[in-house]
Length: 104
Image 1 (spheres, rainbow, N blue to C red):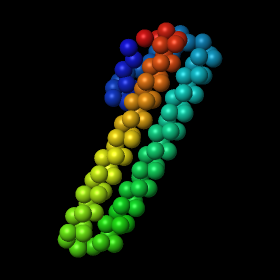
Image 2: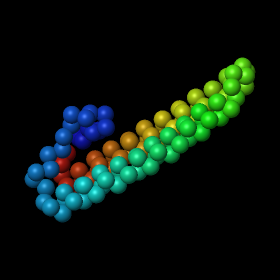
Image 3: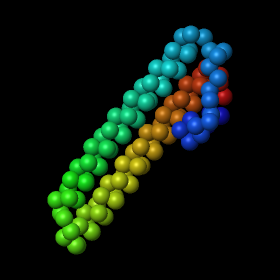
């Protein structure tokens, strides 16, 4: 079974025996997945910048700041979950593709 390339960067798929068309399909799938992940990461980076701006606007006003920090912690946890879920979805899609071309 295919192991996640994200969790195991040393994993390398040997594409040398693939025909040109299959190699192109695999390349396109990886490119699409990279674009999707990059778009999500950019969105989350923008969200983080907005959080930092909101935090600065509160200054050091004790309880309000703590409430905001808790809210941001929840938002960051949700963002982390979305990123993880997308990565897992990409791994499943890649695994399914590899199984269809019999590269288990």
